[in-house]
Image (cartoon, rainbow, N blue to C red; front, side, top):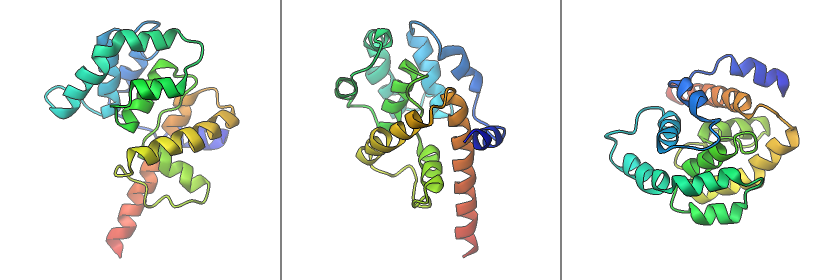
Length: 181
């Protein structure tokens, strides 16, 4: 896995990664830190995006105090966390969990899911952003998180970058294949 991460991480490219790096390790988040992190996760600013901006403001930024309480916990009760943030989409909820404990909880998105499936000889071609939230959460908590914990990877961001890059590659390759048919 070390070689895979090393190779594919070099091919990682994402919108303004400095936003992530400058905000992720704060001991206490401000609303600005959380806003920057979710802008990064979205791949662009959320200002003026309507629904996503409203969701960020109402479901995350207004709960900055609660989020900071979770940061203080040694471990997070995932049932309590999921109840508290049940109004968030799976990807944003998992990303929020990652922002709270970035060395414990890996990031999740369709590219990570696609890579995992490919590495485990599972259907990777049908993994996209239309997977239901429940399916995403079940996969993350019951499959992907135990897998990552078992690997013992110490730099989850490096793994995320590699899995993201490879998942994008698979998706691009898959799209080209479909267009050729």
